[in-house]
Amino acid sequence: MKKMFLIFLLASLVMLGFSQEITVLHSGDTVLGDTTMFTIVVKNLTKDFPDVKVNFLKIDLSDGSSLSMDAQLAAGTAPNIYLDTMVRASKYIVPEFALPLNSYIRDLDKYNKGVLEPYTFNKKLLALPQFGGAQAICINLDIMNEIGYTVPDNWTVDDFLKMAELVKQKYQGKKWATGMFAANQSGDYLLHNWFSAFGAEYYKGGDYNRSVIAKTGGAKAYEFYQKLVKNEYVPPNCSTLTDDDYAMQWYKGQLAATAFFPNWTEPYFKTAEAEGLKRFNYKFVPFPRGPGVKSVPTYFSNAAIVVHKTNNREVNQVAARFAEYLNSAEIQSLQIKVGNVIPNRMDTIEPTDIYSNQVMSIVKKNGIYDAGLTDPRFTERRALQFPILQKVLTFKITPEDAIKQYENALSAVKK
Image 1: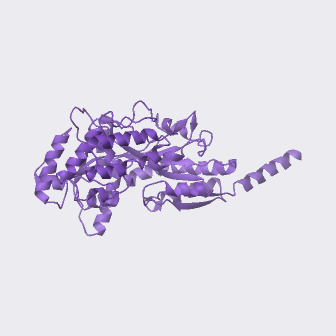
Image 2: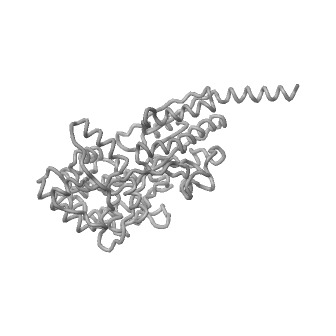
């Protein structure tokens, strides 16, 4: 009788404990055929926890900062799940905030080798990295045909500048060789790859306490930026433009060769068609090599799922299960079909998109540069460059002084 009572009591407590409400702060849902990513996750979650209620809050992306999450935490209303790009999420992948997921997620063995290591601290997995995408230079082939230029295999910065002059002469300020902007930090990763093009590195050997961006030649990238402005190879007043301006110039076919992601092309082409514009032909190639540079590693971007730890194990379990389903093989396979993303699991379908495969071949050949994405100081450090870049683009500072300021500012951010 006593045993039966304990079983009944335990079952009652489980039922009460799992009648939970969780909150998800996110940067956006994704349409997957006739459903959405969050719809699938909630459907799977309620099979395990029928009485769960999931509230969704959208991140304010107006300035590219972590202001939404910061405000939630300051108000004492931290969400149970934080889903966002690593340029913001890294700030919260810390033991003080994040729930260790090792004992909660049931399919960690399905992830590709090494994928979880950057998110593991003192053997505690503090976030689940989502599928991702790498950027490369997107070549507008229609412009290339019109200027009579073919991008060489493994091209150089000199090749790029030759192409830029042809674009200038042909279009007289109506189209440009590449994009440039510095109004705020949003989309800054579209520009940072130029440091790698000149052989500069943000950090060495995983030491994120001090940057080496100046010591490894970052001034060359700033010199290049000033040349682009001086020669009118980029849009005028680019220091006041945003990444939204950049994206608009891309889908309008105004940028000949500029950094982009293959999974961005379809959404922006749909925007173009809604405005009565036609798609253009394109392909992806590596960033051009500066003098003495043998190959240019590229930028890889992904989002992360961070579960906020609480004192309620049942809430933690529901939130972690949400994270598990959000990053499942089912979701990643559907994302591959509609979004040209790169999976990080072994049990998904293989990507077939030609543009994603172009970029993946670039990654395999040239590698990925270390931007310090998984260091919790990355979010704070993002805000450091654009005020300096504005002065570079308006010739108010020399490239040498600018890069020293940037390196010192990065190194001054302490844990």
